[in-house]
Length: 125
Image (tube, rainbow, N blue to C red; front, side):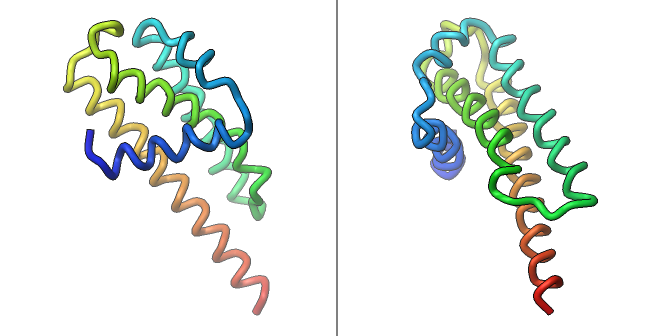
């Protein structure tokens, strides 16, 4: 995993720590790749919800929290993947694919945040 990718993943995991959520419990719950996929799917659903909400509303930090938590759980799973390949029975190509999906979610989220910042700029004028 690239260093910059690892940094982004760790930022989401650190968000969970900042909220004092039990990341070790999340880590223990990930036993097979399907467990990680459930966190991926939850992140996707939360992101799509934000994108729909953003069409008609200005979003604030409180709106982003559910997505950040879901991505934090996904990040915990990715870090487990990176450390324990054999336990989850996954190969490097599959890891790269999952990391790419995570990074895509992150990119979409950052674009969404930027669009909402622009909404502030238009309101202030």
